[in-house]
Image (cartoon, rainbow, N blue to C red; front, side):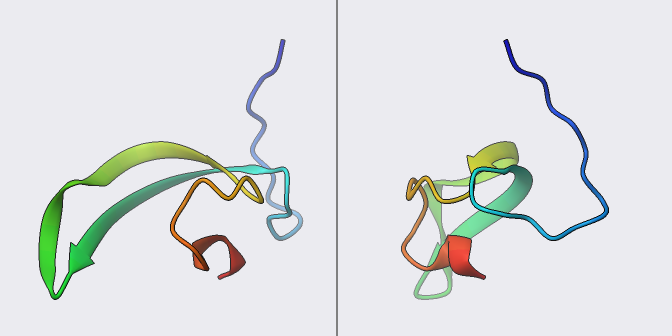
Length: 55
């Protein structure tokens, strides 16, 4: 079992899950399937676009 715990006393680290909203664009145009709200992104998983998790 697992549960989400809000952490506010440190920066995000690999292995943490960040809940994010995002919208992707290509050449300035939003693309289908490139938008989400309350998306659970496990940092360090490599499941998102290259370079995003390093920001």
